[in-house]
Image (tube, rainbow, N blue to C red; front, top):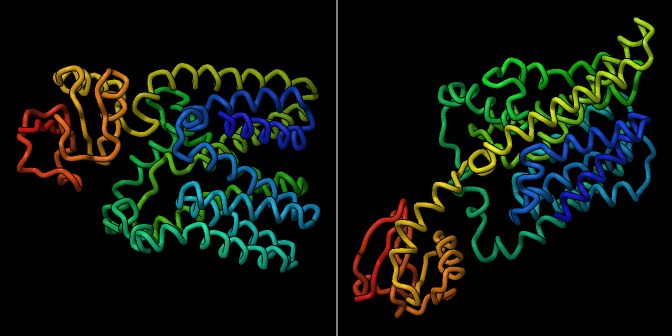
Length: 382
C-alpha cells in the first residue's frame, strides 16, 4: 500500500506540471489509481506494485534529466532501474524502452549525453551485485532459462497469439472500455501516437516518442524471444499508456476548444471522460480481480481446497506441504492445524501438487495417497 500511495502521488505531481491544473491532475491520478494492476497488486507482496512505481520514477527522472541535466536526476534514474530489476527481472521490458527513448532523444536533438550512458554502466554493476547471491546459489540458467522465459514458440504460433494477447493487454489497461468491443480499446491504445504530430509542443512530441519507444521496444523483444510477456509483468507500460492516452485526449479537446472558441470545453469534456473511465474500472474490476489479476480463479480454488481438502483432514492433525503448496500451509494454520514450515517427515498429512515429487525429508514409502483436492494431492502417514 505504501508503493500504491507513492505511485499516485508521483503521477499527480508530474501531471500537475504538464497539465498546469492541479484539480485536473488530481482527477486523472484518481482515475489511474483505479486501474486493475495498479490497485490490484497494491495488497500483494509480489513486486509488481513497486515495479510500476520505479517504472514511473525512471521515466520521469529521464525526462527531467534531458530537460535540465543534473546528477540528482541520474541518481534517481539509476536507483529506479536497479530497484526495478531487483523487484522482477521483467523490468528489462521497461528498461529497453528507456534506453530506446534516450537514444532517440539524443539523435533527434543531435546531442550526446555521455553522462547518461556512463551511469547506465553503474546500473549494470549494481544489478549484477544484487543478483550475485541468486547466480551463485541457483546459477544463471535459473534466470535466463526457466520455464517462464524459454523460447517455446515459432513465428507462426507467435503470430496466431497476437490478437488474444493484445486483448489481454487491453483488458489489463482499459478493462474493456466498451464491453466486448476491443476496437474501442484499440482506439484508446493508439491515441497517444497523435502526440508525434505536436512538433511545436516539445513536451507532447517527446512523450509521443517515448510512447513509440515503450511499445516498439516491446515488439522487438517479443520477436527476439519468440515469447509474449505475461500482462502482469508490464504495470509500468499500462499505467503510462493510460496517462498518455488521457493527456492526448486533453490536448485534442483543447485544440478543438480553440477552434470553436469555447475555453471551458476541456474542463467539461475531460472530467466527464475520466468519470466514465472510473465507473468502468470500478464495475469491471469487481468481476475481473478474482481471475485477470494473476489469471488464477482465487475464489474457486479456495472453495475446492477448503471443502475437498482442508475440511477432510481431522482437526489438530500435523500437516506438511510442498514448496508449491504454500497456500495450504496458510489455510491449515488459520484453521487450527499444526503446520510444519520445515518438513520433519513424521507429519500426519502431506500435501503436494500432482506433478511435484516428494519434498526432501518425506519418505514416500511412509505415506499413502488419500485423495485429490483440485490439482493437489493429499497423503496420510501410514
